[in-house]
Image 1: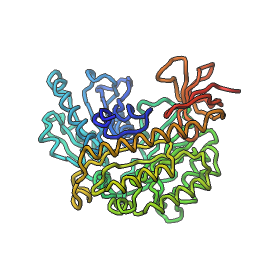
Image 2 (image 1 turned 90 degrees about the vertical axis):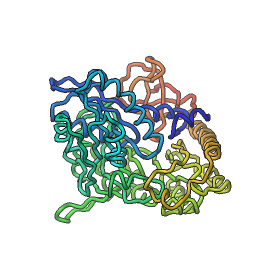
Image 3 (image 1 turned 180 degrees about the vertical axis):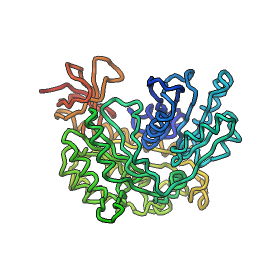
Image 4 (image 1 turned 30 degrees about the vertical axis):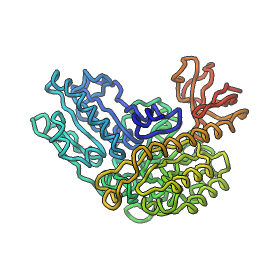
Length: 476
């Protein structure tokens, strides 16, 4: 396990660990454009969604995309700054691109996203091959910045906007399976969790026009997509008001509007902040069968004192009450996942055990688990000392991972002997003879192909399970 911790800063349960290590890469498109864009996306779903916006902007300005690094005229790395290891991965990647730049001097290389905003001109000074640095609110400026780089200038725009939502841009779906798609409903974050850089790299919260979100969901359904995930740093704080003040929409109301696009359009959302998810949202989920019975509700810690210095604005009992509400309204089968941080500043052994006991109380379906790493400029870095030894952090993280893997196996065993409605996402990674797809609770199922295709709904009898996968066969 220690090797896994060394290689991966973000650890999810058994089936997901490898996914976090790999960036998403642009796909081939050949529409006759003069230049080729290669884009790698690191980190969260918001970054993947942003890369689709970037691709759309550049597609309208002379670029097709490529999955072949050697063919690229422009390489963009869309970066994450949440964890130190995420930044190190990008720096290592830039070093690997030095040879590519030497072989093709006209090649341009840019750094996008949260790391770009946080490190700004430092990237241009230290990484000599970088031609442009572009923050997450400056993607409309990319054509101008590319022109500047074409003329030999170093191009930078990391301005954070209070209005930008990219609502009028139709994303070019990257790595799309043609079944599932992301819809960004808001940008930025107003929560000042002491460990987090997001408010500094993505700016303040602003919500996208509700009508544009519903229109995008309708367009995706009309094009054959059967699942959308509504994305935001904190979706439950979504609030949009029309310019004439005649219409106000909160997240529960938006969720309902998207669910009403079509009964065959599954709706997911991420991420929920425990302080903001409301019973109105839970009852809306219960009302519509096509809203998935799954919530990502990051706890971060199970100890009230640690939660206070994390500035999470809730305590242990409050979080447990929220879990009780979810179970009471949506039932024991509602899938719940979490984020957990091991070894936050000043955390004692007893406080660590509180995290383990919270996990025992909830029994998460899966979790993303981290060893704390200090991020410069965050409130925690300014106020607290990162005083937990690395070996202690690793041991605590191991204990969290071990317990979560046990719970993931337990939760999946409940599905054995039951029939689940599965949306087929494609072919199983392990066998061309099997298909795979998720149930409403966000658990992956694998089953023999038969005569079915991706995008179809099928009923699957689950006969076995692992910590990450349900195994079964289609029943009529």
